[in-house]
Image 1: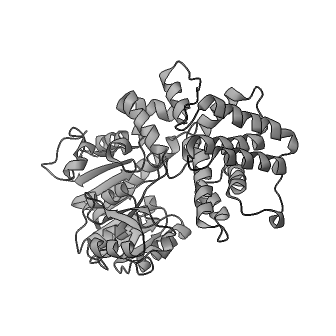
Image 2: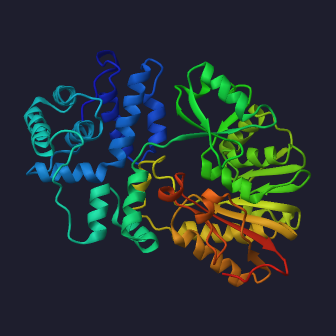
Amino acid sequence: MRKLSARSIPADPRYLAWLALGDIATGQCTDQVLAKYLTDDLALPDRRLLMELVCGVTRQRGFLNAVIDQLVPRSPPTPVRWWLQVGLYQLHFCQQIPDFAAVDTTVEWVGQTVGRRWVGLVNAVLRNYLRLAGHHPRQFPLKLPAEPVRALARQYSYPVRLVATWLTQVGATETAQLCQWFNQAPEMYLRVNPLRTDIHTLLIQFQQVGIKAAAVPHLPQGIKVTDGGRVTDWPGFREGHWLVQDAAAQWVSLILDPQPGETVMDACAAPGGKTTHIAELMGDRGVVWAADIRAQRLAQVQENVQRLGLTCVRYRLGDARSFGDWQGLADRVLLDVPCSGWGTLHRHPEARWRWATQDVTPLVQTQQELLQAAATWVKPGGILVYATCTLNPQENLQQMQTFLARHPGWAVVPPVLPAELSSALDPHTHTVTFWPQRHDMDGFFVAKLVRGWADAPKPL
């Protein structure tokens, strides 16, 4: 793979996307890679195209590779395959890019980076694709396996493992809808800080500078932004008037329902979205302990707390599983555990491929150990909320069943949800699952546990 010298390369989003795909192939996260290439010398349209190409190609890697393998008799070298992915992605998914521009620029960059010998192949593949797929919306005649799970996996670009898991939970129709939802670019939600402003005021300020946003009916502090440019330039950012946080993540703290004057522990706090939400819901009165195992991540919590102007947050660095001195001190505990992240695959495009073969057993064990430790911190009658951003039953309902079998003094209680989210609450287990295809937000699992309540529902 030939990387041109910095002096000879224009800041071309297609070339940068090709470089980024190489970095992602080494195991780097999409966010980290984009941070390296989204430099200030890129104009806003080029920044958007770079993000679209890197995230889109990574999401659609399985589909694009299937198209390539169907069109190319012999598998090309990996750097050539990356260029084919970049070119095909533009032709199939980017209606705003003229076909000739997608083909010509891809072919030109192939000659400059991987050699003139591959120009003819790439040009032929892209033009053959156009002949077979027709006009937008493209309908490429992709050959699908007979087995339904493998057919869905290839069609929507997912590992078989994820598709098979979801099929058992929600069936074929909703699995297809879920796959389509995760293949979209993520939407942006803000959580307004009620201690410094209100939704109405912030929406007026956004409107004045051309930011398209609207209140979210089921979120007391939620705003959805559909177009706005660089986030740090928006009104109220530096003043701490809001924080970026997805709708489902906001609901975790709302289900916890912290009250002013209480002592609340957030066991895995970084980067601080839920910690700061808890403090806001308490009116900044009481004590919120933010714990995290990594100093750099805990510093992110502090930064967000300071920007939002909150004073009730305390910090603790270390492994929450070792905090024996917190026993019986908490009115409420939030345990948003490390998880596989199957509910946020649209935000982390490379994650779907990482979990194609990776074993979740170590994660499940860590979750159990954290849950065991956090349960000791809760006062009698107190609340513990267990949450994940995954749709993997091993990390969700099965964890609750294991915990309750070992802790008969605990029970799951049903939280109060608005009518438009009522389908997220399981009437039998009293747990909450936000399904993206049903509720149009990240996938989350939430269980609200109470300690030592005599009238609590029976265990799962």
